[in-house]
Image (cartoon, rainbow over all chains, first blue to last red; front, side, top):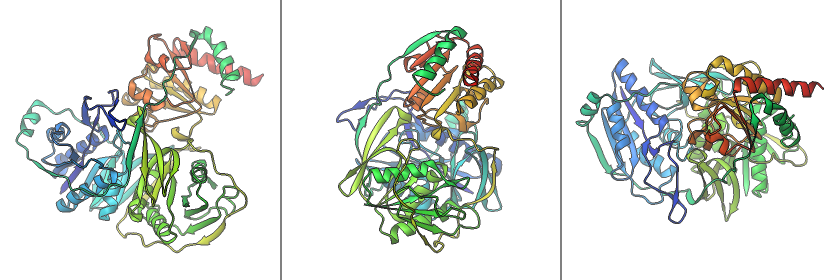
Length: 248
Length: 315
């Protein structure tokens, strides 16, 4: 069995994001990490490998030299990686999906895993688009994944319940929080990862359809009123909720 | 511009988020507004007064399949020459819309907050980095757009749409299908669609203590959310999480109880209209964004608040 995991480099969720230049790019001096949901996808692939045996290949489209998240995938247990070095200035989600789909097609895996969204653009487009471009079934937001009889069976949470979907392999599955707890690589696995191969090659360019025009900060909220301490503040809070906020 | 709205129903009624997507299309100036429903059991007058002039009905597949729904929408969008297809950014909408965009070979804009016409295409405002920034994007038609719930006014208009039946689409044979569905009683309102959210964090100390938040939420007609700390501790399900690695929410009122206010949480809720914070630490960052704050022990303040509200409602 071969599993491909799509991973993306994003600013750490604890980082403040600053706008620079003409207002359409962000300061690059942030802590870059693998998108948290992609970490869960890598973890799931490695667990399948440990359980049933599989080759795990991490694939990422990222700028030149941006490899720490790819190294992390190898340290977590991926066997090798493909780094599509991106130098297309107007790269968008569509052109990203097309570039990644080429690798998926070439590698012909039994399963493609990715995070349910990347926490930077937060659009949940690339993984389903790769699936649709290649005619692979798409199972989103898995909190549990089982592989049996050539099928992937996925459980996911719904608005107030849960549901189970299945699809024949090969297919694309995205990981949602709850599927697993990603591991911290041991020193031994970090050393082992140094010998693993990263296939570095230029990312193919495709026409971009969506253009980022400007970035802006959300309006700053002002600190409001402290109504008081403890239960003594409750009557005033109720008055505010009733007369100012008008929800009672 | 010609727009097609993907219709979702719940309990026999068209979902508010769908009516908001239609509202977004109307506000954008789309002069022809049509809708498509895949499935059985949508009342003919369900879209009355929503400004939609035609409703296409597509027969359902044996069991829900995102690829089947996407194929139905993409085929119709192509045949009908629609410039924009709108989905509500609900769980289903988010899953089907990207597949439909690829099927239609259309540009995709997901979870948009605002829209403006821009030549033959649109400009769209989106939330980035979990709400830390906004971005304005431009894209040409044809387009597939998902609209974030609660950001657009629901559509209004005269009359009922004319109904037209469509054949089943040519959907791929290999596809994902639903095999089990378990809904909890009552069907909880999703956090992204809630008017009032009562969220608890690490300061709740014990999962059992969320009962006092459930009580307050029920009194106010709201739902309970949670911080990442509370979810990571296993106190609440992941679907309750508010923040950059959870849900970005914009309710009328957000109660942050025992939540200190980590940056990734603040990003996910700071577009709430009103924020009320209860925290025993007067230096907690949550007070820097809260409109109203109470410094104190949540375990005492919240039950007292519920009791007071009940008293007021009773009298």
